[in-house]
Amino acid sequence: MKSVMKTSPLKNLKDKLSDFVQTAILSRSLSKQEKLIRESALFNAEWYTSQFPASFDFNGDPLEHFLRKGVFEDKSPHPLFDLRWYRNFYRLKKNSNPLIHFIRTTKRSYNKPNAFFDIGWYAENYVSTDLKPFEIVHYYYSKGEKNNEHPSENFDPGFYLRSYPDVQDFKYGLLAHYVHFGRVDKKLPFDPKGKQLDPLCVSLQQVNLDDPRIDGSLENYFNSIGELKSFFASCSSFPEDIPSRFLPANYARYNSDLGVFKNDPLGAIRHFLVHGFKEGRVYRDFDAEEYTNDFYSRWRDIDKTGLLHHRPTIKPCVLVHIFYPELYHEIKRYLENLSGLSYDIYFNLVENGWTLEFHKLIQSDFPGARIVVSKNVGRDIGGFFNLLSYIRNIQSYTAFLLIHSKKSPHISETLSTKWRKDLLESTIGSRQIVLQNMYLMEDPSTGLIGTTLWRHRSVDKNYEKYRHMLKLLEISEENSHCDYLSGTMMWVNSKILDYLYSKCKKIEFEDGNDRSLEFHMDGQFAHTVERIFGNICQQLSLKMIFR
Image 1 (tube, helix red, strand yellow):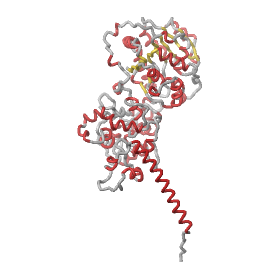
Image 2 (cartoon, helix red, strand yellow):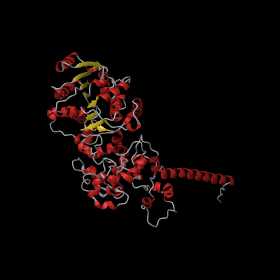
Image 3 (cartoon, helix red, strand yellow):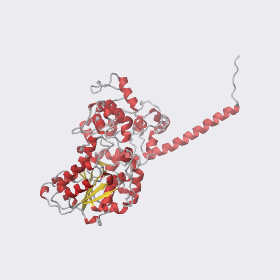
Image 4 (cartoon, one colour):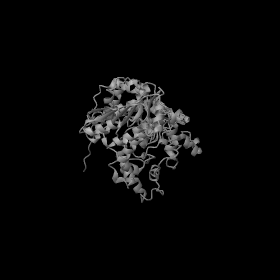
C-alpha cells in the first residue's frame, strides 16, 4: 500500500506567500514598464490589436496584454518597431522585453527599431542628436515621413510611393508597409538605378522565413526550403539583416583576409552576418550618387565655368606627411598640379624610414620645402602636428592642404589604393580641381573640402577619447555630432587648424612602433582628432564641402 505524502500547513503557507510576493514584484515591474511605454508613445493599440483575430478578447487593455503575453509571442507594439527582429539582432533573452530595452537605450548606442530605420543616421541628417531614440522614432512616424525624409540610406519613401501608389492607403505609413509587407512582396525600397545590387543578396533579403520560397536567384544555392532556413539559422540572423547593397565579391576583395570567399558568395554573406557587421567590414563600393543628402555641401550651386582661368588670391600652406617612402613618387605627381601657383610646403618624414638619399631627393624636387623628421607617433595626425609646431602664425595662411602617404594594411591593397586615390583626386587630382578648391577656400566661410566618398559619421572605438576631445575643445552640445572625412586628406581653413592645434598641441599621441595591426586600426588619439575636424568646422560656423 502506497503511502501518501502530506504537505504540511507551514509548507502551504510558504508557497502561497512566495506566489504572492512574486506576483507583487511582477505587477510592480509591469507597472513601471507600462509607464515607460506610455511616455514613449511607442505603443499603438490599433496596430497591436490588428495582429489578432477580430473576436480576440484583450480584457479591455491591449497594453497590459502586450506586457503579459504579446511580447513573448513576438507581437509588434508599434508599426515601426519590429519586435522579433530587434530581439534577434541585439541578442536579447527570450524573457526580456525588446521595447523596454529600446526605450532605455541612450544616444550613445542608437539601436535601430527595425532593419531599415537607422536612428543615428536619421538624427544626423534631419533632426537632432539631442533627442532620445524613441523620440526620433515618434518624430519620423508623425512628421518626418510626410516630409519625404529618409529613415536610412536603404529606404526612400518618395520612391516607394511613386513606384507602388496603392501603398498610400496603408494608414501606418510607407516604412511600416515595407518592413511588414513590401519586403517579402519583393517591392524595391529605393531606386536601384546607378547602384550595384547583387541578385542573390536581394533575393535573400526578401525571403519570408514564415513562408519561404526558392526563386530563380536562389535555386542555384539551395536544394530545399530546409536548406534555406538552415542558412539563416547558422547565421543567427534574419533575411533583412543582409544589407540591400551587399556585394559578396567586393567583401572578399576589399578585406585582405577573406580571399577564401572570392568564389563563395554564401560564405561571404554568412561571415558578414556572424562577424563582419560587428567589425565594421567594408562590403560594397563607395558611390557618390548614394549621398543624396547635401546638407553641408554647396558644390552643386557653384558656377564652374571659367575656373581654369581663375587666378587664386590666396597662398596656401601644404603639409605632407610621408610614412611610406615608396608612395612618394605618386604623391609628387599629384603635387605637380600645384606648379606655377604660390604656396609654401612642409614635409614630415618618420625617422624609421628616413635616409639621406630620400631627404636629398625631396630637396631636389621641392627646393623651397622645409623638411623635418619626427618619431612614429600619432600616425599622419602626429606628423601634421609636428609640422604645425614649426609655423609661427598658423592664421598667416588662409588655407592648408593636408596630404599623406596613406596605406591601410587591415584592408586589401585594392581598397587601400582606392581610398588613397579618392582622397587625392578630390583635393589635387588635376589642375582644374586645384583651382576650383583654391577658389572655394578664398571664401572665408569655407571650412574644409574633401571627397564625399569617404565622409563618415561613426565614432566607433573612439567614444571615450572623442567625448574627452569635445570637452577639451569646448565644443557646444549642438555641434557635438560627428561628421568627418575619413583619411584626413583635405583642404582646410587655417582657423580650424589654429583652433585645434592651440588647444591640443600638448596631447601625447601613441607611439606606433612595434604595435599590432589591431592597435593601428582604431581607438588612438589620432583617430579621434581625425573625427573632430567636422565639429570644429561647425563650432566656427564654417561650411564643409564634400565633392
